[in-house]
Amino acid sequence: MDNATYAALTRQSGLLSEMRAIANNIANANTTGYRAEEVGFAEYIAATGPVSDSLSMASAEINGTLGLQGALGGTGGPFDLAIEGEGYFLIQTPAGERLTRAGNFTPNDTGDLVTMDGYPVLDPGGSPVFVPTGAGPIGIAPDGTISANGAPIGQIGIVRPLDPVGMRREDGVRFAAPGGYEPVDTPQLAQGFLEESNVDPILQISRMIEVQRAYELGQSFVDKEDERIRNVIRTLGR
Image (cartoon, rainbow, N blue to C red):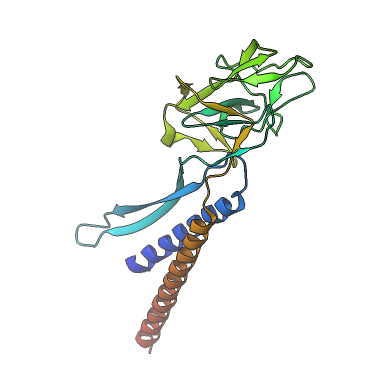
């Protein structure tokens, strides 16, 4: 198999990766706090010998998250929170502390503020946020301070990753930050709002059509190259 075929096949593999990312983005277009995945293409060149041409191969990986903020939708829920600007909520999972932009929280039976998956929401010190049952009207200030009947009872931790590029997506709205994180100096929370997905369905569908056409073109090249090689083998075999 020559270099052209190798390059075409690796390109096809990359296009499939991008198609999967686009499909996942479209599927999460209405998921609270979801941020779209981005695919990056890279070229790898390897020497094949002193008198031979180098071998070039492409690679495509889901290596980024679109950082644009989604629109804020009002819910009126006292524990529905949206971050305006930078930052992530800090939550505790069985795998460790994780970051998320999905702020649809609720108190559980013991009074701990948890995510829709039941994971505790953490304060700036890494402890679960506790909301006493029947404590009265709950107010949450822009800096995350929680008050009951006007008396402060806790604070929601808002952090930013030290290495945003190194963040790993674990599901649609949850991220691991291997590089660590630090508190946001001046967080801006909006109580009674949720951040909507930042996916633009129209742009994603347009890109899906482009990727599909590119894949079909690449497949046509591979088929013709296969036919050419077969013809050469048949000719030489006579």
